[in-house]
Image (tube, rainbow, N blue to C red; front, top):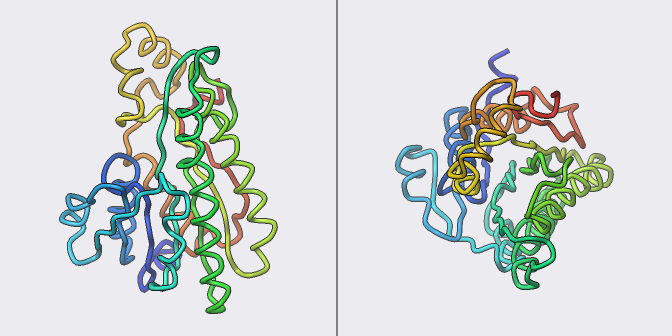
Length: 244
């Protein structure tokens, strides 16, 4: 079964690879044999250093949703991981238009147009491809004080299915991972709030916050030949949160 999970000879581009979930995915894909382009609005030098000659750094600021439009014309990429994302918190009644637009631009609009550019390149080359989107538990739930984030992640789930329907015939699979509560910078505010932290842990059957590495294996699976017949799926990796 080793070959079914190997990424040897493949090139992957991972957005938001400088830290957290994106860094863990980039390192796991390098460990599975892929050459990894570590993309982010800030340098992914730490990730690249840890991956060695399996990785390269690429500055890509997806606050401009079209930032990746030319990336795939210059590189032959087999795997795209749309991980980059931001979050803003405020009561819905007070939520600012700027915060709404910034979250939707990075989390949803950039994801679509980056995927579009990837798919166009793959189709032009007659190549197969794998897209792995990072969704969220808030692709299924509404959350509290994060209306734009919830909207964007519901959109990620919908786009995953829509793009699967159009691109499967071209040999491109499109799937998503919905991480549970993972210890990253995006969840720092929750972990630092004693009452919210306690309530969250009380619901997770695994009894702990997830680590970025908990997501990495699922990403490798969805990028590898083992998942060739998995398409349009949104896989929750959440320690059992949605089961409770």
